Length: 502
Picture 1 (cartoon, rainbow, N blue to C red):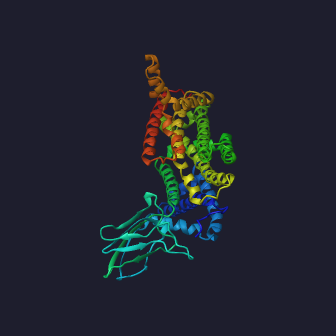
Picture 2: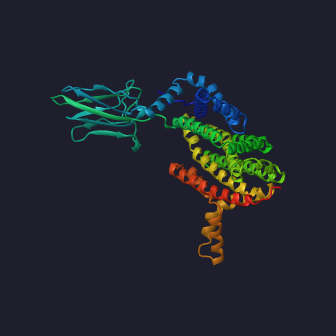
Picture 3: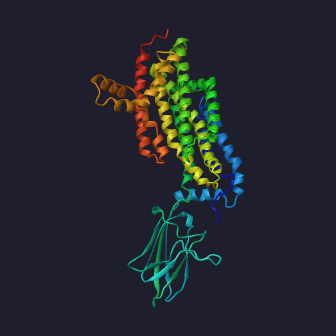
């Protein structure tokens, strides 16, 4: 059987199809929730429908529709392939939730030669297998094919004292071939031998887990925003106005268009890294998205706060039953939503270009086209970097909001990008101040205390070394970003509280 998707131009498409399918699933769940809301609470449903015209849910809906259209466009070609990728993806998804353990007990007749024992699983899904017997026998897992004897896995002796087992985690060759594995048992015993076989199955393609996870995240984001809209209407109104104003700015469209073009150009750029071009693309793409998102956020903070104060618009808004604290929280939420939109759009493009880069490099080096799961695996490694970059951008959004309560756009840009540069240099500053003069140590500790340590949100070393980023690290980074953002918002409130708006 040929490897799945080998030597096909459609190789890079399944990872993109999974993202589109996740968007389609999320869209279906959201529409179902809206239908239930319309039956149970018509007024809340009307509020949800009206929120499509604000600055976040409307663009998010168009984004989900676009990704769903991508999935729909690729569904027919993928379904027509043999074997169908959709069948393989569906089987792996079911394996994530279905029982994966099985066992079989058979009796081998005395003196049997090559007695066949059919097994009820696919070799590609096998995680481990144990074979034990109450007598001595010889077990063969690979049978001759077309007159050729396969010797990749030798026959094994099994007796009560020495059972046989295989574990995928050890890196050993899968002992079975084909779609329906069979054991052949041979025994010289003069009595029947009882053989017990136990196995555990795993998803054949673990990469398909990105589909339910992506759908769940999109649904959770929508539900959280809906909860804010229903529970904190004034704060949500300020956030919606801020997001809508940001999307209307030319810098937002320029950032998206420039980011998309550059991410596709990164595919064909020769990095001359002797096989690590994909890692360079991921690193460059993450930095590009982070800088563009930061530019949009700082620009929006200046327009949404500093210009409103100078133009006396803030005085009109705050003349209504809206406190200055809620005003700032709404602005911060709006800036965070703007950053989230940029990361959802450009992050999807980066994941697509990463999967395409794997195929491009293979063909440039005249190698065999990689399997789709190789493309998906590289694509998935981008996700932790995107999450950390988003947290860093949200943290800097709080700093920009605090600065914008007192300074205009140009000083805000200078301060924020200075904090960005020094924040990444904090560990180096602290390390270089060790053993120096007291004043040097004091300055190093002062920077380490006041400035955010932005290196916590950089995973260049993990990307370069193909080291997976644990969820616990993402959790601690989110906690750090949340604490620092809270402190920055408190500083912003202090600066804004006594600001004369008249």
